[in-house]
Length: 209
Image (cartoon, rainbow, N blue to C red; front, side, top):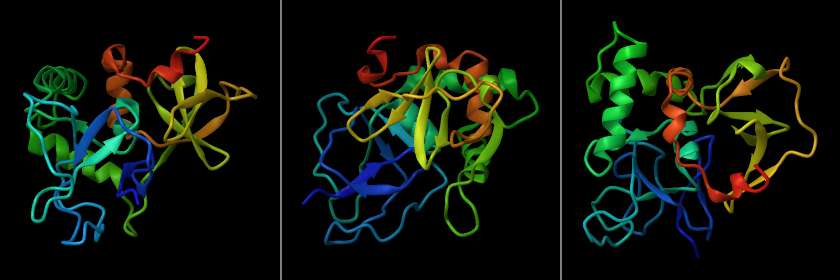
């Protein structure tokens, strides 16, 4: 039976056999039976590479942080994660530099960034906090909700998300439509400033692009 450690763009943790392309960390979320007992433990939600210097881990080891897995980087950002400052140093520094440029009055430390992002992640009941915007105003890399499903905006197209990958929407939404946005607002502003240029998106979103 698959472990409950695959992350959706709505930040939920699900059991699914599909492999991810990035790993994530929100702290220790599982018990000794490798069962999820909570959905986050720290404000530091990070996105990591799957392989770093050949280190091998036993997934959900007792007392160790819970390894989470994402389809791609776009999914991790929608779920409220940011690049790890250790195993993804260059990506984190780029993120931090853009943060300082776009939000010059804000704290640019990891703790300060995580505090802001955490305020945009969750409602009081633990559900994902969303916001609304005109579709045509949103940059590449943003995830929105359409008919109860996550949709990625990428290269001028709209891609329906799944654990296995993306497929194009059959009926494209109008740029003037007001939509529910899953990706935190601060991250979307960074996408506008150039963060999406280096965004790693699953190969399925390049079919026909």
